[in-house]
Structures are given as C-alpha cells and as structure tokens.
Image 1 (cartoon, each protein chain N blue to C red):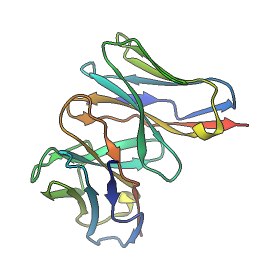
Image 2 (spheres, rainbow over the protein chains, first blue to last red):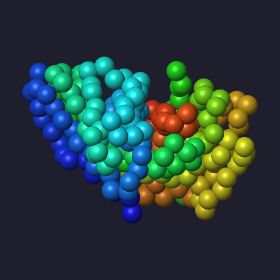
Image 3 (cartoon, rainbow over the protein chains, first blue to last red):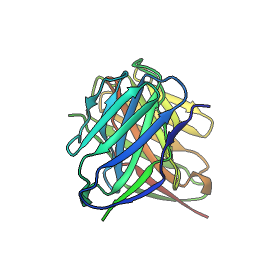
Image 4 (cartoon, rainbow over the protein chains, first blue to last red):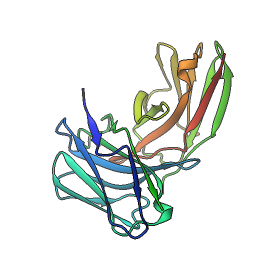
Length: 114
Length: 109
C-alpha cells in the first residue's frame, strides 16, 4: 500500500514562528502536493512539485514556501506564521504526470497559530 | 482559474439514495474524480470517470457526467450510516487536481 506520512497530526505555534510541515511518501512517486483545508472552502492548492528540486505555485502560495531535496520528501514552510494560517494541511502524492494517476493523501496536520 | 462548485450539505435517511452534484469550469478535464474524507482522516479515492464516458457504475456508486454542461454527479444507492463523510469532486486540470468545497453527507438511521 502507498503510504503518505505527515510528521505531526497536531501542531500549536506562536505568531511569527517559522514552521516546518514534513511529508514523506514511500512509493517513489514523482508528484507531491500541499493543500490546506478550511470549512466551506474545500481543499486549496498551495504548492506542488513534479520532481526533485522543482516546485510550482498553486492557487494560494502567499506566506508559504516549499522544499523538495529528495524525491520522497516534500516540506511546507511557513516563514513567519500568522493566525490566518490556522488550518488543516494535507499532503498528497501521485505517480507521475499521466492523466489518470490516483492521488494518495496523508492524514493531515491540524495547525493552530496563536 | 479553474472553479469547482458543490453544495455544502446533504442529509438523507438510511436506505435512501444520495445524489451529490458538482459543476466545474475546466473543459480540458480528462479525468474527473470523487474522493471521500471520513472524520479525522485524509482523502481516499472513491471512483473516477473518463471524460468520454457518460456514466460509470461501481457497485452502489453511479457517476454521471454531462460534459456539455460541465456537470458531474455521484449517486450512492442504499445509503448506509458508514457513508457519512465529506465527498469531494476533483476534475483533473493539467497535472493537478482542483477540488470542490466538499459536500458533507449525513445519513440518519
């Protein structure tokens, strides 16, 4: 089974802190994604990556950056956390750019910024 | 950019059929997915349909696609309490999935 693991289920951070959310997949997938999920807004794409050291902005990249130094790991970075970044963060991976490749999701990290 | 719209809530009684609707704007979507999210969990792929199909049936699930109107629906027959979850429509635009807001299905015994 494909496994996508997010390092934390729950995080509480202070405003202004630098926050790292880690995601690891174990199936040699090329594509990795970071979404945030908010009630009534569904999932919104923050950043995605098709390959190592490659990244592309999603729909809401402001206030975030990402790092993909190894194929299996995709990190989301909040340079200076703010309260409006309190949310559920979901990482996903998929095999390649082919049109029918299922995306596998991690369990999510619920981040609270106080 | 691409847009996907779903109603936020649906409530049905156990044993009834549920129909969850979705409209989208990206006409280039080749595959259209339905994902299910149970409480406290990530999303799991439920089913999908290829854009040259009108209908796909998979056990209790029926997906209908009206490509002209850019309308997708998911019908769950004989809905059970275990079907209570949030259902996301996700057309695939280019290399990325675009998600709707999610429809929270509540099944009452």
